[in-house]
Length: 452
Image (cartoon, rainbow, N blue to C red; front, side):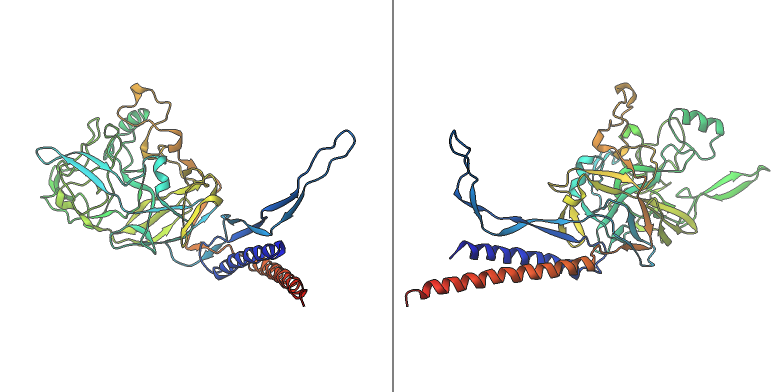
C-alpha cells in the first residue's frame, strides 16, 4: 500500500464527516432553536524523508523534505449567534432577542429542622441558586416553549422548569403606612410601601397559590368600626386570590421560608415577621404569607388567564381578576457561548471550553444586584446585619441590548444556500479522493503485473 492510498482514505473519511454535519444541518432546517454546525479540516501527520539543515562555511542549507498523509477533522463548531424570530401565536412562547440561554432545572428541595414544640427553627433550600458556583449544574437552552404544568410550575415541553427571579411578598410591608413612615424607612434602605418585591434568589418559577375562602376562624373575615362607629364585616381577601411566596428578613439570610400563619398578615414592629409554625409537607416551593394554615392551599396553584411574557422577561397573567407577575426569566451567558457542550436535543451544558456562566436580566433593575439577595462585597462587617457578603461571581448583569419577545420561538440558524454550496464542494472533494484510490489501485495493478 502506498502513502497516497492512506491519504485518500483519510480524505474520504473527513469528507464523509463533513457531509454528516451538512446533512444534520439540513435535517434541522425547521427545528426551533437549532444551531448550525461548521466543520473544518486540518492536515494529517507528516513523514520526514530528509531533515532540514542550516548552511555551513562552504555549503548552503537545505529545506526539510516531508510527505503528508491526508487530512482529518480539525473542529466541529456550533454557531451560537442569535437566529430570527418565528411567531407561533402562543402567549408563553419566548424568544431571546440577543445572546444568552434559558436556565432549566428541577424543583426545589428543602431541609427542615424543628424545635421541641414543632416550630420550624430553620429552613434550608438546597435546590435554589444563591451563588454563581452552582450555575454549571443546570441545563441551558435557547428554545422557550413554555407552559404551566399541573403543579403551577413554568416548564418547557419536556417538563424542565425555567429558573428566574420570583416576585415574593415583602416581609417589611406595612398596610396603610403613612408617608412619614415610608420615607423614614426608605432612608434606612427598607421598603415598607410595596406589597411584593423581586427576590434575587434564582428559583424555579411557579404561579402563586390560591387563597382559601375567608372565614372568621382563619382571619379572613374581621369586624371593624366604620366612620359612624358601627361594626362592619370586612373581608381581608377573596377566595382564589393570588398568594405570593414569602421571603424572610436579612437576619435569616434572606432565605425563602414557611409563612407566619398564626399572627395574621405582617405587622410592622421594626423587625420582619418570624418564621411561622405550619409545615407544608406536599409543597416543593415556599408558600405565601397568609393568616392561618387553612387559609391557603399548598397544592392548588392559581388559575392563570391571558398569560404572556414582556420584553423584560416578566411572566404576566390574571388570577381571580387580579394582575399577577409570577417572576422574571433569567438569562444565563457563558464566557464562550460557542464552547458549550451539546447534550441532547436543544439542551447544552457549560462544560470545559465554555468558561464561566453569568446570570443577567433582560433590562430589569433589581433591588439587589447579587444572587441570593446578598449585599455588596465592600460592605463592612458591622453593616452586614446577618446578611451574606457577595462575591464577583454572584453579580447579576443588566443586559441593555437583549430583550425577550413573547408569542414566538427562535428559528433554526441553518442557511440552506450555504449548506447546498458546501454540499457541492464536499461531494467534489470526496469524488477527487476516490480518483486517488482508483489511480493508486491501477499503479499497484501494473506493479503486480510486472511478473508476467
